[in-house]
Image (cartoon, rainbow, N blue to C red):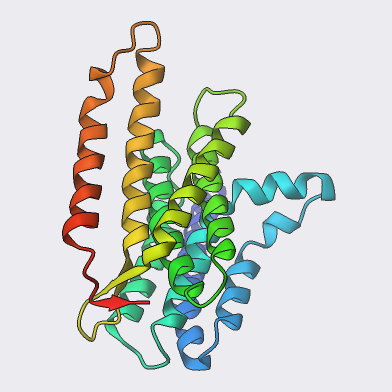
Length: 260
């Protein structure tokens, strides 16, 4: 019996080591191969291959699996695209992206409590919107709008699927439409802030949508908590916070360092 327990512990330690190693390999490899090849193709393939379990099901479960993994896919694809558009020479942003992706895979992604799902969604909104804004700079605005709809839908669904809400289809679609509307409005003045020679680029729309997503979640939580006695004062703090921060960004920081 003791030998069995010892062998089982050894297998668990070995499997944990392999799990960590493979995630580190994916996190670093996705960025490294993108920069070295000067193409996002191999990095994207690596991210998609890492999600092979999505496709290893019967066809009728494929769409459900895909929707459940959208946030993770958005983060992985965004890391690759941001690495690609940062350039083919290694810069601080590439190191930061590789470190972040490893942290995401090992520590953030496995969490499943309510606060964790909110953090995961906000990260996906920020990175996804950043990648979309940079990637679609020279394309028709409809591409950017549709991609933001998908991000809004995916992140809203990610949070609501962990809640007690049984039917959240309409809510997720509305959130996607609001994201698309904000993206369409912001597309008229696509502003991206850069930070010296680090390669860091932060689109203004990514900040606005992340703040909106945070306020939206606070408002949703308050309406559920106080549904029998809901008053505006219950959502005053997050709404006021969001309005002030977005106003500061739009009014005081709309003179871009880098304008696409």
